[in-house]
Structures are given as structure tokens and as C-alpha cells.
Image (cartoon, rainbow, N blue to C red; front, side):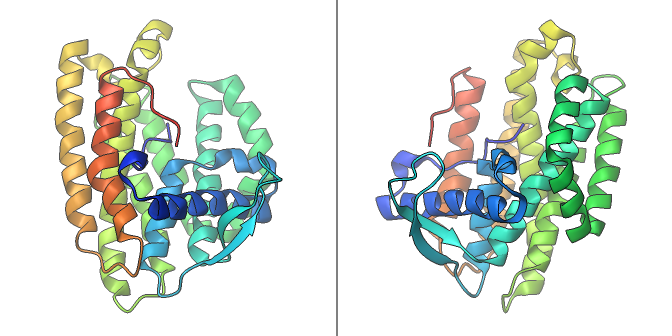
Length: 283
């Protein structure tokens, strides 16, 4: 489901793209340091956006070091490290991946879900201890989502997933060191809600034909293909406008160009590609 919240690479200056890549690689390295090598598979563009957003709003920036990586150990590149924003985005990556695997194990993809949840069990238990309240909230929301996905096709499931991401963004906001922290605590959950709803519906459209063929639950099977396209496009545009409006309220310390690129160009570009049936480019 994750991987849609991404920048439009061609419209970023090289320095801004390199900064974004340093955060992506830094998130991957932070997951390794906190949870080990295997959980690095949980790194996504969506949680990289959260890490970038939290870094952009933090009083202090991350450290930048030059290191090799697992895929290219001989070439050193800039890596963002040692910052609470990266720590939390790493925790959030594990939370979402682990609970998604547990949910799959109970419902639509039992074999794959059980396998993933076993691989992430140790990391999942650790993140539960680190964020007990958030973990309980996510469990409750996923249970609600699971129940609605057992009934008639209902696009309201997107709102439930929006609440899940709102809780993750709210927890991230509470960790920030910023003079306008109270503003961030009010605004970031709404950003998470709009993004979560956007991700869920875009993924539902992306999977619609496969789910129809495999007889899997999909809220958009309530509509014909043309009607589902029209319905999704309207809601996605509304979500994009809401994300843009909310992010414009925030007092950035840095990286506002990257956030703006993702919000105003990356989200619409991804929507257009998915609705057209095109593959998303590598970043």
C-alpha cells in the first residue's frame, strides 16, 4: 500500500534531490541501527516524507555523514543521521509494516501476512514497548478497518486509514522541538489524515483489477471502472488540496522546497500516472 508519497525528481534542484536522498538513506540506516538489517525492507517513500517533514520543522538539523550503503558499499554518499525525526520515522515504518502484516495474516493474505509478521515479530515487539499508546491506537483502528473490509464495498474505509496515519503524524508532532510546537500538534494530524485517505484510495484504484480478478475486497468494486475512476480522482484532488493548504501553514526551518515539491507536484503526478495505468518511475 505504501510508496506513493514521493517527489517529482526532475523538478528538484540537484542539491534538494541529494538532500532528499540523504534522508531516505538515513532512514534506511536508522532502521538498521534500531532494528537490524532485515527490517530495512520496510523503508518507504511515505515514511521518508514524514522524516523530511519532521526534520524540516525541527529546531536542529540532522548530522550529515558520508558512508557507503548495503547496495553500493564502495561509494560514499551523504547520509542524514542521529536525529529524533529519523528515529521516529524508523519506528513508524516498523509499526505500519508489522501491524499491516498481522492484519494480512488474519484476513486477505494469510500466508504472506504470517510470513511477514514472523520476520518482523522481534522488531514489532520492540516498537510496541517504545510507543505503547500509539500501538494500541493502531491496533484498534486496524481492527475497525478489518471489520469494514468484511462487509459491503465501502469507500469510507479510506477515512479509517486516514485516522491511522493521523495518529502516526500526531505522535511525530509531539516529539518535535519547535517554538510553535502547539501549532504543529494541531496541524500535522490533519496532514496525516488527508495523506492516509489519499494513499488508501490511490492504492485501491491501483489494485482494483487484480482484486476483481482474485475476488478480494476493494471499496471501489462498488462502482464500475469509469465511475470508480471519476470518484477517486475527485476525492484525491480534494485530499491534495487539503495537504497543500495545511502544509502552507507550517513554519519550516529548512527543506520547504522538498516539501512543496512533494505536495504540489509529486502527489498530483503520482495520481495521474496511477489513474493512467502507468508504472511509477524509480527515484
